[in-house]
Image 1 (cartoon, rainbow, N blue to C red):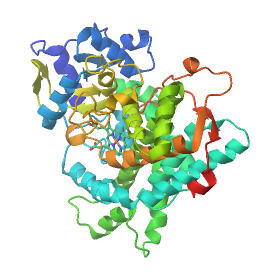
Image 2: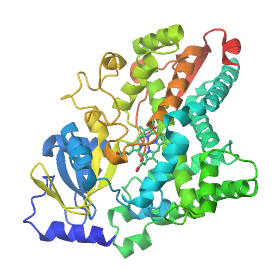
Image 3: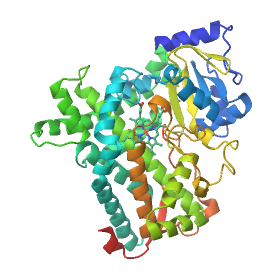
Image 4: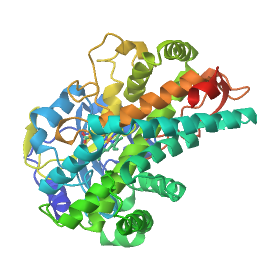
Length: 477
Ligand code: HEM
């Protein structure tokens, strides 16, 4: 917080610094009026993109009192996540993320330090690497089969299928079973709380915009709301931990068991408290379910809106259970990266393309804008999965015009894990069902509006008709 104040001070009192250009500011609110007046009012990634077309790919905004450098091109993203990765591999802690991450003692909001390195390594070793992802194949198959059964049941009753809800439950069940060893009766409550958290921590509420104002802290409801969400979520996770604690006699190898064993053995360089375990489990539940489910929801939405792409994907999946599903997911991640704004913090004074970025400055990489930049992509706004056919461009963090999982030291550790869920679920939905829009809705009128939040989901639920294709009962079992 002190650091934020210092940056703010530095920024206004030291005109000698050559800071990146930005739009005109107003006293007290800084650049916020540009967001309020924008036609994309509730969608900061779109407003930032629009501003960057006028002020360039390295642009300075003042969000309330928080100066923030916005990065909007592949070249600048490479500067931040490759050339100067060590200077930008920390995460800023806002008042709301401070609460939800227990002071940055999780992985996703942790500063770059030994604590972060150890926790990330534990998750990679025990849950997220290629071998573990293969070990959990039966869990994915089981939960995807349950999804297919649930859709079939509703189809036979002639109902419109709420595919959003089904996808979020399925993905969350997979994440729960692989992380804590079983489903949880608290799943729906958890998903409900998560929705609130995603809205509250995306940086555009008064306490995060004016972090050092005691008055705003006192007046604003956001800090209280996030505090309540945090205590409900951590209560759910701690009751799961407590149940497991008492039954530890049964050896299990899921992430929670490993963390509890490490806690008991006390071999880490820091004390692994229940609070830290909860924070890590929260990261995995959140990072794992929200992102993969959101991407699947957008993938099906784009396909039903583009019948030719749907037909092509479906024919290939039905022939080989392979092929197009991977291209569809890549194209969906280009147009709809679930986390469009990636936050970083500058750890040491740095120069990017001749501009100064002071220590402690917040940085946001607009990966949504980069994925839609016509400098890198033909017909950038169109959904064309075939653009990735025979293309070497991948999301592994080395092609900076396409970084839906981020890049550098902080790149998403759940890439393989998330893809394994998305690919199986998408292939199964395409293989077993023909999908149609609700009666009377034309493809051109199909609503693709985005909702505001840390992850950007559909604003309206994805409601579709499904018609089983063939042999479902036989194949799904
Ligand atoms: C569609 C799937 C996913 C997408 C698009 C995605 C995207 C991202 C992005 C953009 C970041 C920030 C990277 C950066 O700062 O450079 C991130 C971080 C993270 N993701 Fe994912 N993610 C996905 C799935 C997952 C899954 C399945 C898990 C875990 C089960 C996960 C866990 C995490 C964690 C723990 C971090 C924080 C890493 C750190 O700060 O060191 N994500 N993800």
